[in-house]
Image (cartoon, helix red, strand yellow):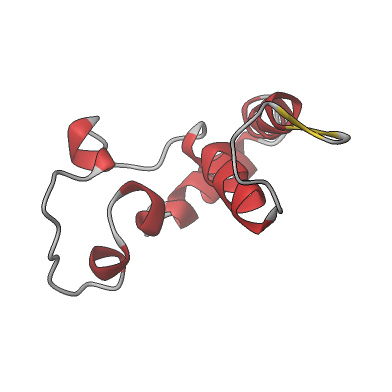
Length: 92
């Protein structure tokens, strides 16, 4: 997740050579929240696709539905402990 919101060098704990402020700092992000997880999943899915330009639908795959399904899975979990453990794991 750090690769997406900061940079690959900062994700590995190295010195950053960035010439501009990272997304996490721009948006005052200090922790991973539930909405960040499906956002990261979307970025990975798009990155491994053969598409060169972003669109909401990629063939039979709908990015909005994918995002909402993951959010619903996390937010509407019948096991609040699972959600807490998930977020805790993403914030290590």
